[in-house]
Image (cartoon, rainbow, N blue to C red; front, side, top):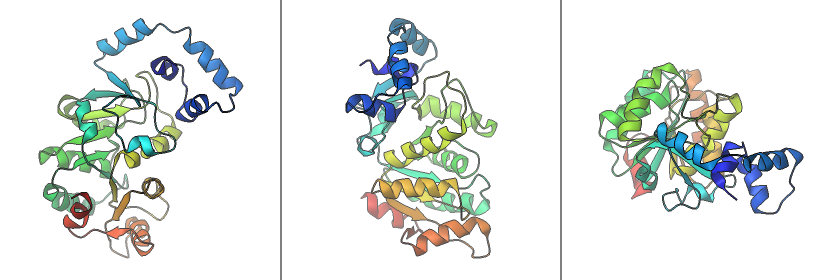
Length: 262
């Protein structure tokens, strides 16, 4: 199977697993695989080169070994930047899009003290943006996981750091360049953040939050999970405080994270 052509035909990670494991092949998957056979590989490669986009499959030596451990791992990753960063020890940082100054101040305290750790996040507004910016300003490596193809960007507030990251750091996506924004892809993106990381830190999160979905994914993948303890009167701390009560590690200094990476 040509994984690049399957990707351009829209074959999902779960559909790929069905192909690999001789599982049930749906009519839709049959349609996609038939369409893949009509695609021009040379034309696709020329497009990727013109857009300065590389790709690796799950069989490539640079593919993150931790990511390959998750059930529905992406069988292909498109990238701009330095794919060598996929071999770094990564800390996932996620949190509310409505993150307060508490997130920024905490990350400014924690991240610069971490050693030999790259920051992976989703290039979203709020906690993600703060994590990427603070990592860059402190000469740490950072990786952004896109929930769409490399031809698209969202939100506008992170457009400038994405340019910087694609020059000196890394952005990755499981989707071909032309893939537009769809809501379900943001949840799917979170499994890549959790899967690549050795641990995931949630800064602020409401009781029902997408960030906590990422934390649950990290737990399912047997990763370390960390939360910032917060003000009990803040709605943005209800989710993190609850997860700490349930067993997540409370983070009050960088060593609370670093000791799990050393």
